[in-house]
Amino acid sequence: MRSKKLLYLVTFAILVACFYYFLFRGTDNWKSKPAIISYVKPFQFSTQDGQPYTDKDMLGKVSVVEFFFTTCKGICPKMNGNMAVISKEFASEPDFMVVAHTCDPDRDSVARLKVYADSMKIDTRKWVLLTGRKDSLYQMARSAYLLDDPKNNVANIEDQFMHTQFFALVDRQGKVRGQVYDGLKQPDLDRLRKDIRRILDEK
Image (cartoon, rainbow, N blue to C red; front, side, top):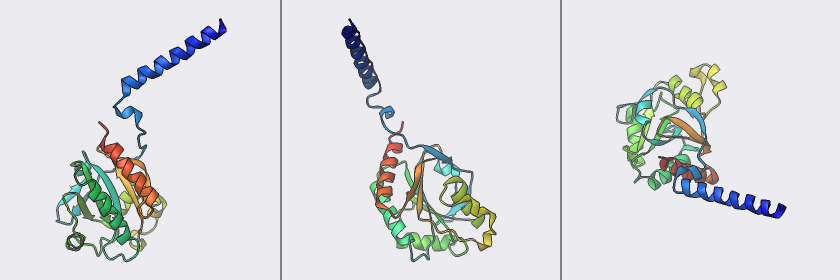
């Protein structure tokens, strides 16, 4: 009698598992979804072409966000080299963007960002370079994208210089997803690629 009950329970469990498999097969419910860790805040910066770029322009796009500066001889060339590989990989995706902000707006004017974009052969339809007020740029890095310690905001902005190697990932609704990705470490870059694909595939 006990063995029959056990058999019924096992059979029932298998049937339930099969039901849910066929119900959700082919949907995003089977995929692990990158967690929401923050949200994009309202902003307005200028692109390398002198055009305004705001948080509204990111809506409907899956964006990888970074902070760099054009005169950097240290980590930035390698970061942007890695970013170029990612950008090329997802170039055919109409909803994919790279959004790069300068850490050094005093030097990185619109004109200088344009020269940098041309030197890197960046397709600015898919990869925008932004400049603006230093305090606004740093606030976004810290409070929205989590790419620098928010406690650094207490210092005088004129005395600060942010230099971060991390990337953020933003979904179509302006939610910062997944984790903070190290733009210099291959395991993080591989994870970023997978998370970009998962978010692009979200319905």
